[in-house]
Length: 299
Length: 299
Image (cartoon, rainbow over all chains, first blue to last red):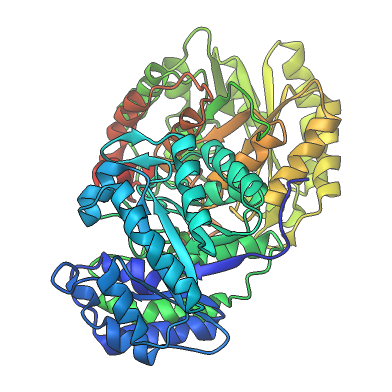
């Protein structure tokens, strides 16, 4: 038999990673309803928003309001903070989890946050230490872990080395991302099997994009490597702005559907999940393209 | 590591299975160019057409012309023949391979060809014997091997039993199909592992639909079960007329792309394959929906 877990945890990234790539501002009330509906559907860990500069990402101008109004008990309320300034804004909220972000690829990191990967790590080390002292859950989003739009293939050794540095810095979770949706299932299996072997006390999460429609196959391969946590985005929102024509994150509904059909529990109700998607759908600049949505809509 | 083969054989079903579900008649010259381009791309086994009644499937009214003009040496030129009348038409061609068709589900078989599964088998046994005596390659397309739109889940035992009867009747190949695109990867793995275990001297081919976007994940699971032959359709054409809103067969380009990225050879050139898709695209009643096409087209 295939080596598969009984249970999988979905980390919903639609409200942050998904929204962030939407050109038109989605009204704050819609975002809040989206988050509420996702919670009602059974999501227990969610990236709510990002404390980036609203000059750079106008979509996140309402981050403080979202972070203030969308917290829930017994759930992981994650906000992304790209730098020290963002972290200070986190302290003014009641969020219990912080995501920090770094690219394995130096070129990508420079383009994305104007720092080398080394400088990011150097800046983040004391921040992570401080967050842990204050009892925050710390999630490190490791982007371009497989491929970079500028540097091409990223070596496993390089990704593993950076992951180790974050584990040693004290993070609770590594979210290891195929940012531009280039990874193949054998690459997913190989990297995640090694991560699983090396890091026993860190939550390991896989983050795939469906750019080349390999999202579900990559998840199947990662499950076999022992991974039971996946970042997904309701409606398949999001996607990397540096990859034109790219689809977004692997859609939560497609992943939940596949897992349910395989007898793997996620705790997420598909009907309620699709209600959440319906809340944001009219406000999006693009069509929902998930397999499950298209099946329901007879597209 | 994942248990994967080095090489995979693609059986292109676009010109038959794909076309058969197109409402508007695609000009015969276009079909011929499609087939030629697919061959140029490297396809070695292909379902060319079907000797069904043109009253039932007007799209196949040009079957005799296609079968006469589209043969190639050193390739498997497959024509489908649903009954004795179709077989007699095959004899008037130089095709070297015949596909016969049966549904595991009795209800599906009745709806599809107005016979019970048992009656189909009874009629086909002497036909297969005769075809083998005449040195034809015989392929048995076993449909509804996982799920039936009328009967729901089909038991593995039932599918395995019917497969055994066809193997005993003397077929060279079993093409075992998830006709309505309902199978989950663990189901695909389970059935194909058993087929592989039971039938050592029969070519075993998996046929998936991407209806619920599980096509590639199912192929990944089947590869691990030891399957190295897949029916696919260029452009993802086709699909079951009894499953409204369903996408078609798993697209050849998506499968070839995934396999290539995994280092698995198919002998098919993606650029030339997409040229073949471009030949038929303007004549189709639906949009091409494969991941690879959408990526190239920045849809």
